[in-house]
Image (cartoon, rainbow, N blue to C red):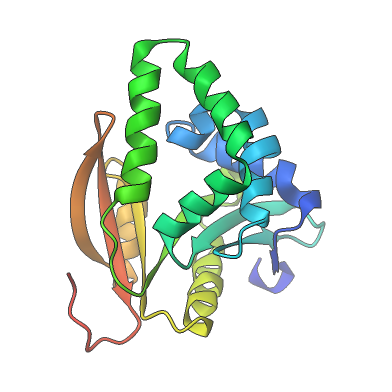
Length: 208
């Protein structure tokens, strides 16, 4: 599989494929819960327009996307940047979602605030999203995507990288532990438990 795989930056032609992988692989996360149309028409176009984020996709020999990774240089600034670039689109989907119920409104507000004002570890990039199609899992695709993203982070003189994930994603968490990542914090958003894992490129740097 590795010999027939290509890791490429996201271009507009792959947005729909990446959005579908995201939507199907992580249905309980906040962004997919806003709908596939939102991912295709709002979120990923906004990501492409931001200089603070980069999406890499894994393609097989048939140019079929098998998985992708979204990595950011400054996660807090990245979220502010894409909100600014697509403000009216985000406002429209936020209002329509919030009008469904008071709970949706509270959830949307809490997630945006937590994303903008979450703990900022100095000089640390972040894997914002990583997802692989179910039929292609266990083939080393996640490792190759991580290698590509950490290379991108290092090229920008960042000293480490982190990722947030649901505490219930045991398989992913164990995968990162095996790769040398360490637990940084536990936190709760909209009634769900999350963990932040961190990896420093220089082993002499202490874990937070």
